[in-house]
Amino acid sequence: MTISSLTRRSFMISAAAAGATLAAPSILRAQSFATHPITIIVGNAAGGANDTLARLIQPILQAELGKPVLVENRPGAAGNIGLGLAMQAKPDGHTLFCSSSVMLATAHTHIHTPGNPVEGLEHITMIGDGNFTYTAPAEAGAKNYEEFKALVKASPGKFRHGTPGAGGNIHLSAELLKLREKLDMPAIHYKAAGDLITDLLSNQIQMAINAIQLTEPHIRSGKLVPLFTAGKVREKKVEGIPTSVELGIPDMERITNWFGLHAPKGTPADVLAQIHAATVKGVQSPVAAEKMTAGGWTPIGYSREEFTARLISDDAIFGEVARETGIRIG
Image (cartoon, rainbow, N blue to C red; front, side, top):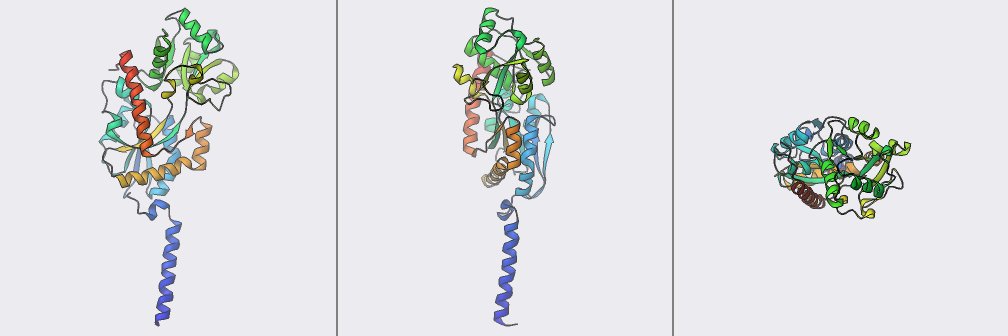
């Protein structure tokens, strides 16, 4: 074989290899850290919001990291069972945790917790964020927040609000409202969101806080009155709902309906960088972004530094509310 034919053959082999590399997922080109299936732990039952968002990014993570990605539901103890498993997992990138802001709330209100999640996890990114919407039944007699506040102040202790669990993010959001507005309104805790909505619609409770996708049909039918959205930006799915910032209620925008991805403490920086890149690609994928928007969330994809800063800020407001109210769940 001549030198010319050898050169030609080498070029063809190199070109074929380059083509195969370009056809592979981007993380695989950088030699993915993954050596076996990756598990995303979700601290709630299947069908919940963080389970839904974990499954939205699952296919992209799987394609980018080159190994199967499994979503494992480990409900119980207000999400603390799943959190504990994630915090104790081997820090090699093969175990991840999909959280909600409940994680930070229960760290301050529950006596038995696996530890401080801000310090005990590596934070990858926020997947999606949404505002909580405060609603009252039309039967309560208020047409807006100012009228509702006047009714509550006129009858201390008579009006009650519902929560989907004591000591969680929604409970502390309501307690923050009561602290800032000096409202006497007892809390009623529910195990199922369906029961809470039923009692809200029948005026058994007079206020509840939910993601807009749960209350939108009842707002449109006139059965529920939207009081405000706890945030800086108005809700897009239902027009005309004022924000807490517009109404001048301090700090309410600091507790939102976000969901994020984390890894065990000590996971190597290069592994975290790969997971972050894959997750952001998943968040920004047209399918995931469209479904999140339809569900009332805004796709986010923060940098690791931005997400960590947000967690520290949120942790501070949850801690303040827990201390001022003395809420402790055994």
